[in-house]
Image (tube, rainbow, N blue to C red; front, side):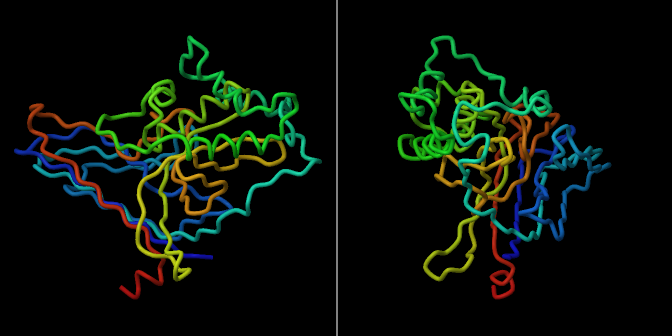
Length: 296
């Protein structure tokens, strides 16, 4: 079971000292049967007046910092070491209730899944719904895995990754029409398409780990990332990464889950000062195997 250490540093710079409002930090990996946090540390400079940890409505770990000091830089440095055991390749058998689509959710589970089944973004012309139905067989039923895999790899093959400097996540229709976007855009597109098929899906924020295939060892690399979880009867929440065509948790380090991307922003806060006081934000992320970190 690989031991991975995640180094994440974000620094904000200003032309003159400013005051800081509340900041919410969502960087601690989310424990599960495939991921266990062994240690974690968060350093903030200048030190906040108060730092408290909470679990949000989805059970994510969130640190909330408040400040009473002005400064021309604000730095967040997070370090976490985890055990990461990727789940086995996802598969359904003919005995599973969700093997074919359409399928029904259990009556006891459905009330808790409604928020993940209900579309959150408008589709007045039905373009998103039509695109989602494109992954169904002409004659029902369709194997569910074929829909999920087809959509995951379909986005990976037909859409172009493009960094955007604008904040937030673009509307799924914009992603569909332009055929380009970020990992958060691709995740939201897939989520909204699945919801229009009545399939429960939610947003996942975390890290992408970049291994070295040639030596079959984990090498330094990584970035913040976003992907999708889909809930299937008897299978539970399964990960799908439409940006890289990954099914399961290989190379994916989960931090937060949410109904909407706006609820899973890694770092969010405000400053009090002139609009032109802000200079730049720099983010440095590295994910390494513990053995690699010792050798370095």
